[in-house]
Length: 263
Image 1 (tube, rainbow, N blue to C red):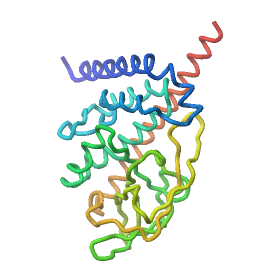
Image 2: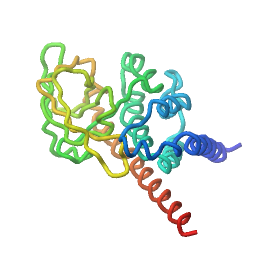
Image 3: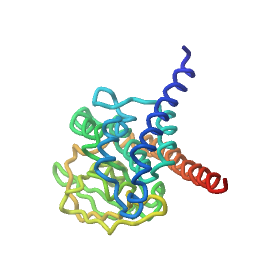
Image 4: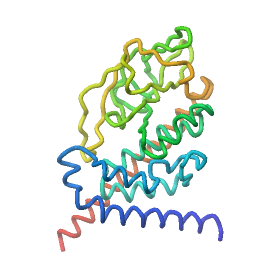
């Protein structure tokens, strides 16, 4: 069997799993998800059973190690049933699992990846400051050294998975360098806006986050400063594919419903 045939089989298998999940578990409660702006615990537990939290994670830490193509096809299929759930998994896998898997230290991987791949923790990353997630031209969030800690000050206005995440990988200026550092949600020196509702993503609200001389250990740095351009490039390239999958899935679902209604 050649690699293309194997990949196609993997894609069809994950699509079938998600179709069954969507028809049997999501469709009966999809209106509740939208009206309550909340993903039920029962659905999130099923996601963990299917291994969807760790699709881009290493098998060493409980991940599925699916190809990125399979991941995108699976998330496109899931979007047809619940854009809120698919966006949660897309942002979680791309912006936390993928980054820590590729650039995390051994300690960061052992401490975080098992919880991320099982959904015990949800993560995200945030680049731009001023409402554009991928705009890295005008970063004003600053990190300064204070002994064994970095002190972070600034505001990120548009945080994907913001209301659901347990930690945030934050792009900051470190003097003349730039880098990404992990900040826990329960850090007392950060504050959150009220959730920002978005069309079709009720259940996975965005937030803005402000940091007030927020101290984090230097060991929370993700990668090295010289890795930052590569990390940003990977985020920008893969998140657009994820957002495209959400958009196409929503359009396909709308078309299917329109055809059904017209008949």
